Structure formats: structure tokens, C-alpha cells
Image (cartoon, rainbow, N blue to C red; front, side, top):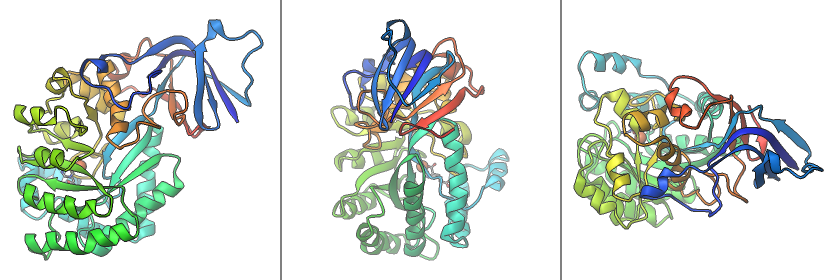
Length: 412
Ligand code: NIG
Ligand code: FE
């Protein structure tokens, strides 16, 4: 099956060198050509070129889509979400407006524990259908590859229930999905902290491992949640089952999460709102992807991560939505790219790379996703005609995605 897209105003995110991530000044280049065509064969990118240089006999294909002068970009890759959850938490939203902080709400037994209470009452089917509504929403907004975490179960049975829902999403959506076990998201109700860490290590991880339910493991390593020592113990237990770490680090305080992540070869360390300059140095020369979540800073009024300094220090940086009911009830990656420009001070090209190739790398998937390169999975979206790629973050509430193609198939 060959799908040809013609009359592309701007074909963007091209990669001839098949790079797995872009570091420092490399991020300034988001390669584009104008007035182009793109050929997809059997779900993967095959070739592209300028319309003016198209062979006179045309390019044989089974189907042609006329992009009508719109841009074509690689689909967003969102490497940090919690989109399986049981209900919204707008009550806490109001509490925050009235002056309570995220940490204070958590300390009162609200926050993540409220989501766990609610999730306990829902069946796998109910959770699956509510999560699929969010999956559909992010597909329409241009996301093509997503990581989804557990972490609202907080006991063995409910954590497994969440991970089985994520597995079902993997099997039934055109999105590429990676799953992460986040049993250590908060201490489950009724447990002491040491007992809960024992439960994660001795019971949850082996159960998750035996059923192959998670690609990765995560720990909320932060003030008021889990310590670096507890985190290390959990990561070591999970590594015996082949789960690589992705860490919640430095959201509420500089908490040692970056150090423990780097030490255990984490694929990514995420959040980083309270990261220090010393932690930037710790990341140098490692393969751990710092992943900044500017939607969380926006929604919780937290400091914005030091993405600019990290890129200037030569590091690769990714961004993610963190879509969840407590700290970021949005999976809109276009808005994340706008925040990356406006608040993190990344240039549009840097922000687009942070939301595509580098965010694919933060999921261990940049060999197959995150750019338009020959042989990669054909995940793209087609926009309305736009003057330049900088228009995408600039027009920060204008929807631009018109058509979505995932694995070479038109899905929207
Ligand atoms: O990434 N910080 C920890 N976990 C989520 C929030 C979870 C929640 O509040 O429900 C986050 O921000
Ligand atoms: Fe998170």
C-alpha cells in the first residue's frame, strides 16, 4: 500500500541522518522543505521531494492526499502522561485558587489519594472507556506516540488493573503506547511508608514483571513522597524484571531524583521545576533525557524548568504534557510547545524537536518515531496552511491539526 501526500506547503521535521536525539545547538535545526510531496509505503516513510521536481509520469501510489498547501509534521511524541484515571479533581483546582499548594493538598490526604479512592470503585471496562476518550482527544490534537503510567492504584490489585487497562489501550489504538509502572506515586492508604515500599518491591514489581505489564518503572522521588534511597531500592528491584527507570524528579523541591536516576541509567528524569545548576552538570555525558513539563508549571504556578540553560549547556531536552487530573488536566502538545517557547525560552525549532525526536528518545522509541526519516513509522499530521513553523507555537490557542495519519493510515 503506497500513500502519496502532495501539495505540502511545508514538510517539516525531516531527518536524513537518522539521529536518535538532538543535543544543544543541534536542536536549532528543524529541517523543512517547501512545496513538497511525501510518500508512505506499508506504514513507513519511503521518500519525499519538491513538487517541482516530481517525475513527469508521477509517483505510483494506491491513494493520494492533497495537503492543500498545509504543513506536514511528525506527530507529537508525549513521553509522560497519566491518562488512565477515574475522574476529574476540579475541587482541588478551586482549593488552589483559594491559596492551598499542591503539596498541602497532598499532605491533607487529597490529591493522588483521592484519585486512587475513585479508581478503586471503577471496573477495568469503565476505566478503559474513559481513558479511550482521552486517547481519542490527544490523537485529534496530533499526538502519535505516548507513554502512560499507572500510579492511581496504590495497592497490588488496583495497580495491576491500571496496567491491564494500559495494555488494552496498546492493543486497540493506532497510537504507539509505552507503559510505566508507577506504584510508588504515593503511599497507599492504610500503609506505613516502609511497609508500602516493601509491598512495591516484594509484591507489585514481581506481579507486574510476571505479566510483562510495564516497559518502564517510575518513582515520585520528591519531598513528601519517596526518598532517593527508597527510589534506588525500587529501581533495583524493577531492573531485575527489565524495567528501565523514568523518574519524577525535582517537581516540588530539589530532591535527589536526578542523581538517583542518572546513577541507575534512567531513560529520562522528568519535571525538573526545582532543578539546580549542579543537577545540569550531573546530566552531562549521560544518556538520560531531561524531560520538562511546562504544563505542570503553568497549572500549579510552579517555577519553569531550566530548559534554556540545559540546551545552552549542550544537553538534549524533551518536553511532555504530564496529562493527569491533579497537576495538568491537558494533553495538548501544541500548547506545551507554545509554553516551551514562551516560558522555557526555547526557539520554535528547539521546542518542536523537544516535542518530537527528543521526546521519542525519552520513550526509547526514536529509532521508529519522532521525525520524518526513511523507514520510520509514518506518523504525521497535516495542518491548515500556515506561514511558517513558528506559527504553530505562536498561535497558541488556534487549532491547526486538520488530518492525522498514524502508521500510514488516515485516522482523523
Ligand atoms: O506528574 N507529581 C506526581 N504525579 C503527577 C500528578 C499526579 C496527580 O496529582 O494526580 C505529576 O504531576
Ligand atoms: Fe507525572
